Length: 363
Image 1: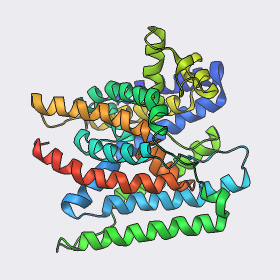
Image 2: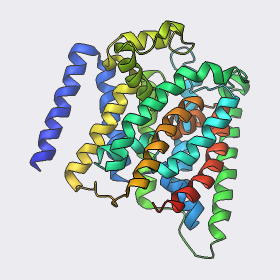
Image 3: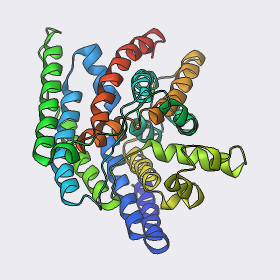
Image 4: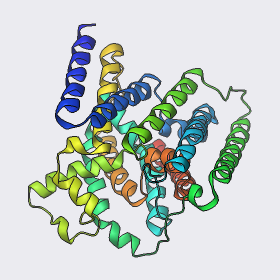
């Protein structure tokens, strides 16, 4: 109880600091981040685990919770984008070679590392050793991926496609819900192949999905952009590299872009993604202080090495794929980006490989 009260006091003080010295928006985003972290950790809402349970156990409950999250988020996000096209932005990424490769690698790496971007954050907040160790190499990989992104895009890409802009609100919602229904039917069919009768609905995950969807919509309204994770990681590493004179952002295609150059120069507290990430860590830490859920299986040296390499690949590939399960899948699909659907297909194929590698190394 004392730990929770002390943490709550610290979080309140930090929110007040942001409100007073930075902006009310950053303060509100920090609070939204705390909510996201608390729900993710409290419900153990794992995007990675949901996919792995479907693949290995034919348990579709995690995937159905994610589909519910997407359906709710889209129901709010797309009308908001249609009503406020200049104030709000969709999570658009260009269909490209980098997207195909990045999503495939990310899908495999997240199964080995047992966490995507948000999963790594909240599990680090829960005190799980592997995810705590992965967080800095994830950031390094994300930075290097962003630094190399120009080369990858030169291999071939098209302009981003946003359904709301291309076909209008009604058709965008219709296409999105049709896609979600088809994925749901496929997951339901796959779950039936096990021969074991399981419910496709898990009460805890369903509640988590609803809360995460609403918090993601709040993030869109407050920030003016959809919820993301990996940009913040890459920015943290880029700031360290820049401060140490290890790279010149002015000659880099990604970091010389005005918005990224500004983010690199200004305080991290002004970055929209970073402040939400800090909130997620805080929310998960609050859950850990209450439940002490940070226990994990002891890993051998080989498992540690493989896990750390997977963490680095998570960061690198997520930048090539323009997001992770949050930035590409949740935010991409719910705001009508075609790249989100491409990401899901390739990442699931990668997960099919990743679960086998995970099993081989005995995780």
